[in-house]
Image (cartoon, rainbow, N blue to C red; front, top):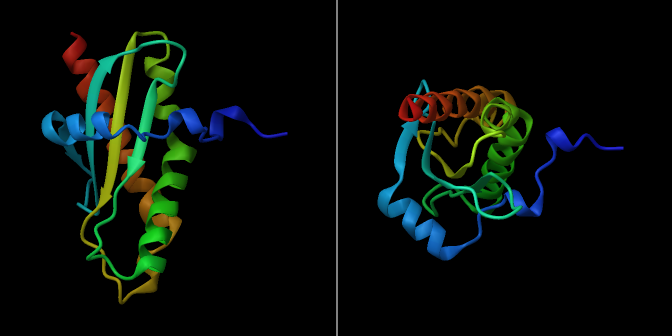
Length: 140
């Protein structure tokens, strides 16, 4: 039996082209501590029974080959999936909805140790904490 707290359901994935365009146009930018991952986020009002937080992962075509890009996307999604409770537990009782796009930045593709979960997980956790602090600051 799987724990729903650590799953990443279909409803949590950001797929709407209109929402992605709006996010890139007017979203706020947050970078991780050592600038390996950047995120754009947009705060909105929760509508319906859908997920409160929706995410997407975008990797530039200039980043390695398809195998490397897919691995990076998998690792970023996994990092979010394992740490999403940091954000979701704080906003679950409010009427806030969030859209987030994670983008990797400075990666050394020659070094295979860069493409490991223990590299991306602290970065994503740092970004989620920064997003949460910005949201809570805006509510005051």
